[in-house]
Image 1 (cartoon, rainbow, N blue to C red):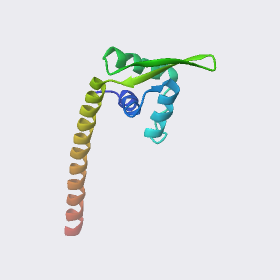
Image 2: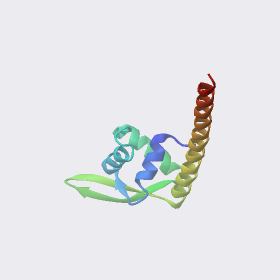
Image 3: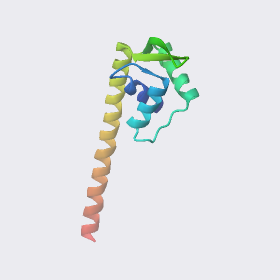
Length: 113
């Protein structure tokens, strides 16, 4: 199981390497503005993901006098992300099934009254 922040960071890196600010913006887009990573949080997540070999440094570039580090998803990262997506989908399916059954019971009970 991974944190939501880690899940979103990995998802942000699926299509291309990104630098820190690019990751922050992509996570905000993916979450429809619900998740806004602070820089300290982002780099903590990236450090953990790198230590677990789920992301790696792709390249470094100097732009406007500042060093930008670009990170990319590793094959292990893609595998871990896929496993987490499957786990979350199974949890959603279980919750949805139970809520549907609850709704059906409520309709039946309401109709009998």
